[in-house]
Length: 440
Ligand code: FCB
Image 1: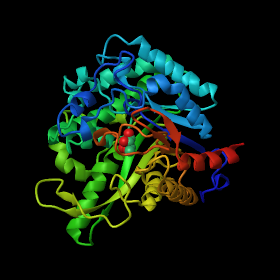
Image 2: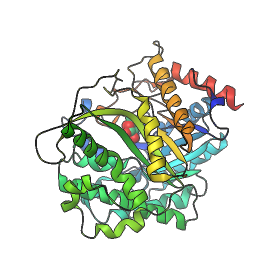
Image 3: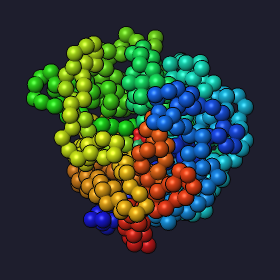
Image 4: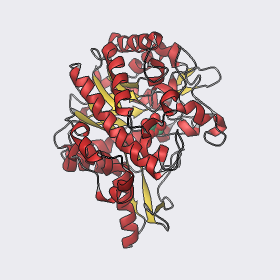
């Protein structure tokens, strides 16, 4: 790798990220059904109709996996807790086995000198709550607050950081407008409600965790750089709408207590009654903001109702996901987030990485190059004044890539989904050399 640890501030943290449903194996340990199980069981939604029943079997192999995190020299491990594992019916009686699992996991990190960075919700909504309308239901903030209380009463005393919800855009837009993720809706009214209830639930969870005396609380948003496909005013306006929906809606809610006009134009009539009164809760002060970044899109104007945009053909080299490799977008988001929204608040790159169709015998140099280029972008952002304090690679190991099943491999560690054998890839070895040599 070209990147050098010495080029980053002394207290800059490096880590890896995973999420519960993508690695644990939801058929084990008394976890309840989730909306991803029913979404995957519906033909056409997920490649080969694969689900998270077994995934990487992390539920049983977590010690080996934490050893891999430690072997990498990672200082922080970003993991998530499954709502359906902890509360199989979404509310009510807790599954003690589930709470015990996260308790052991956190202690396992601490025993290895790794800081636990918890995310409460990374998309596996309990089916019982999905049956009640899921994120469309105005009771979600209360249910989510109860889940937060249940989990954090158990592990909140030992986690290093906590964030309520991974990637509000995916929970809201991708799942209710694009229909690409569970529950697979394509409905503007459902979208408006989900987007607002996600932010309100975030606020409710922060309130619960503050009351428990927890520190280092943040939010994790995913951003995608939107570039107009041409200079034509209609294309420029379309890219601005895309940016507003994807990126500025959530930052606006969290930091300014308002939603962008370009989004209200479409979603305004569908927001739940009294939405304007929720911003005190939504924009309660945070201790950090997390940025997940992968790619950019070229956007053009399209016919039809709001939001009237479409993706234009890409121009840069692509990853296995078909995503453009565009490190400048990471630099620019870090700078813009600090400048326009979060000011001096610490920023963490909470996810960054690429899918690569690698095998154990082909070195995954493309991933090493990708990480190198994005670390250079982080350094540029720091040089430009953005208070970036850490960087997490997505992901520790190959896992369930949602509607793309097990086909897309984001791991630093290869997983054979037949035998479940873990084999570190060249990118793991490169990072381990780099992180270990310099943290010693
Ligand atoms: C992010 C998700 C993560 C994974 C990566 C590739 O949007 O948070 O679970 O799917 O993309």
